Amino acid sequence: MEALNTYRGGPDERGHFGHFGGRFVAETLMPLILAVEEAYEAAKKDPGYQAAIDDFAKHYVGRPSPLYFAERLTEHFASRGANGNKGAKLYFKRDELNHTGSHKINNCLGQILLARRMGMTRIIAETGAGQHGVAVATVCARFDLPCVVYMGTTDIARQAPNVFRMKLLGAEVVPVTSGTGTLKDAMNDALRDWVANVENTFYIIGTVAGPHPYPAMVRDFQSVIGNEVREQMQAAEGRLPDTLVACIGGGSNAMGLFHPFLDEPSVRLIGVEAAGHGLETGKHAASLAGGRPGVLHGNRTYLLQTDDGQIIDAHSISAGLDYPGIGPEHSWLHESGRAEYVSATDAEALEAFQLCSRLEGIIPALEPAHALAYVAKIAPELPKDHLMVMNLCGRGDKDVFSVAEVLGVEL
Image (cartoon, rainbow, N blue to C red; front, side, top):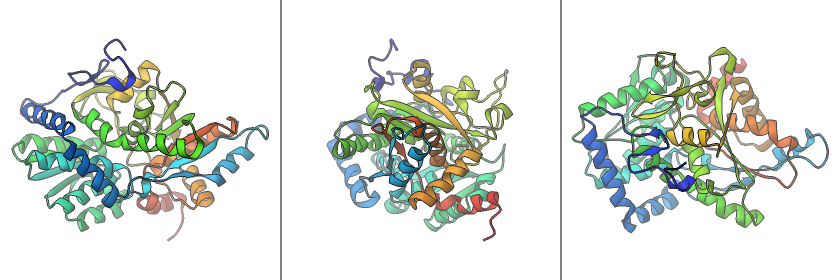
């Protein structure tokens, strides 16, 4: 905490949140990483850059996204409480209503406009659930830039609708067969591409991870979520929320929700990791609960790893949470105690997925279904005047076929 005066003050000049973050990249990449940082710092000072983001966010993305009172879920949780005075009032921040169906477009919009400022002519990205890949392919189509998306073969199989969407938008989807064919492996191959094509290629990283300045830059673009929640909650309830809840993979949707509230001690922050088959089984993606600090993909953070530092394959029913690490700012918030990090299993997420669909008429992605699963645990015993906001960061269109298969439903 000594290095950062406030929770919102990080990172320091070297890209560190406490002893997390930093820049651990190949020497070939360092000049480009420094150029990205320099370009972003200059862009932040240019009113025209933010004006362009705001204009596209409004007219292309569809911001602001609604803050929705989940009345039937609120009633459901209240009915499960110990007495009639319990049951938090639940709101959804509905970023699944954004163009492309998730929060990912917020970050992709900011980065594509930065890439254009830098004169880059080729875009690469990694994707797990496909939501980031779709968002990158979308902005590349809009701004007429070639797009290559790396995606693990396991994720290609379970996220077929998003694979087709990317191809329809003009992107080249490169299957990654190494490792378990999931997000970690896709990011490995994207980084290899970047090293080989530094002259003309911009890498749009999809979460608050990677080498500095990416964790802070992606967080800044995603903070539109929390900034809108502040205004919308004041309009709806006349005060700040009591609790914010979001799922955690790399952690961009959570950081976007949390960051504008970090210096509000009255606001409780809860990030929900993917517990997979259960933390005790080792088949999970809960880096904070089951990992320890190490270096991966350009930054120091909490990772799932063996005693000798070899990365352990993560598991989650959700392709977007199936990553053995977490953004470095989350690691810092975890160790400092400002945010709480818990977990939900595959089975709990599936139950929440179905519950939200049946009670609210909203089919969530499996990622935020993990957050809702934890809300279901704590909301029934909270006071009725307790205001809770959960980030509904993606819609479940992409997941319906894989969920149907798991549930044994014939289509």
